[in-house]
Image 1 (cartoon, rainbow, N blue to C red):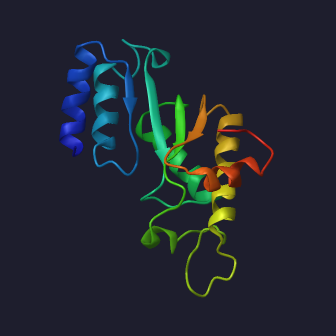
Image 2 (cartoon, one colour):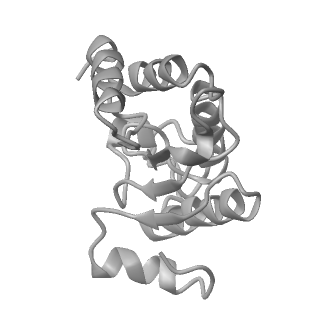
Length: 163
């Protein structure tokens, strides 16, 4: 879907009773979904925000890492004019290489000259930011998708919140 389809399909889904949305900054439709929800709920006045369930995701086309994750969450909150996401998923265990080269997190910057790059530590840094988002109340739940056992072990080894 593109932005226009995201908008029109959000209106259609809502009109037939849909209350759950799955979106991501890597989906071209996300701005349209946001505009559709804000439009159809009259900026959350005719339908309360707590009556809608929105899932969003961190990465993979956007940057991974601590600050980049916090930036992605803030951008989502502003786009959807809300103070929280119902569920935020760590979309993929690693970002695509073009995005990764630009990360402000040394563990996630895969530039050839960066000796600190570590996919495992990048996952842990990203997860730590997601934990902070959860603790701040900006996400009601956090989790992962498309992870395999070795990727999950990076999170489990933190001995903190479990996806």
